[in-house]
Image (tube, rainbow, N blue to C red; front, side, top):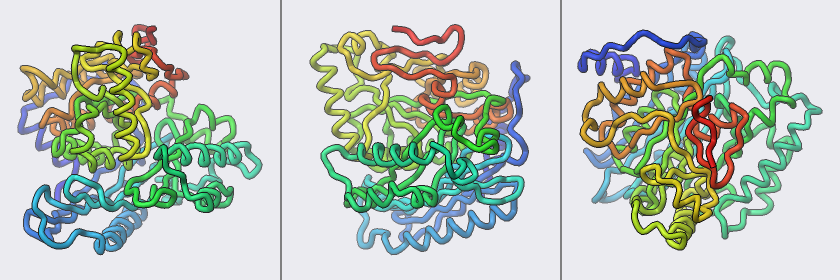
Length: 449
């Protein structure tokens, strides 16, 4: 078994990597919010064909560690009967169970533990557990800790649950009685949730409302709308103004094993990310899309076809419709924004594509002649990271998980929290608008028409 820290140190020593001194000071991540994750040796049920992988969080709180380890073990046993049987011909089948960790404020840490079975490039099973802890005491955090009983947040949550869950899987009607039950205030108060640096997310299995859909649904509400309705403790613990925020973005996927390796690394370090995927690659990456969706990452559009030519208005809108339909059928949502291939956004604005267009404030250099230079790519990400920045990378690069494993602990040392693109802009009070172009937040990175 290998700990995250050991892996990172080994990579750095192997590559002879020396990090420069920090150029910009900010609040460090408190010790109580630091963690590592430990991957257990794979349990092979069929040699090279079927295995179980468990990833255990290790925090400063022994009680939380014990509870999370026990929960992950329970989830393995609950999922084991759903593993495929018989001959496995193509991709290895596996059960993967581990926690996606996020932090907010000075003491609160969220664990979204997911058990998923992938078989023949599809996700055939998913289950989850979500919990928030005060890491100083080890006590669970409830929605009642965030919102007073008479807060207007409760009817806001009820409306958001109904509206957002109904919007999943267009063309399918959610089971009415089940939906009504989920919108009940007492049920919402018991609903599993997590807190990121920028939002509250309530979590649900899709098959609770939509038969045979093996992915998760999230009801998301940003702190910008909720903080005035919170308790004093809630406002304190959702204040992340002392940290820097950065959006890590990866283009050109899905990329099968490369994307899966990267998702493992992001999980180990508790980093959120945004994936700009190519639409025609969705069908062969069904399980990767589901994994990104389940973890709460954002899957956005990089056009249906990665091309710079023949970009007529008719083709652009037809590609968008095709992308929306195919992605919605797999994970229940449509892309909330897009990045034009090569950043050539003007044709998409002209066609009235109807999505915010996301550029970048820093580019990693992980494609082209330098794509194998793991040390150099990591150095570039570290040197160009800034509060409010958007970093461009590619999960199509087979070494994306390696350079990500190097720069993430360095960003953490410098007080960065990694968020999705929409979280980044909402945290700075910016609403993403259709057909507007965004380069990150800052004096030199204002939205452009």
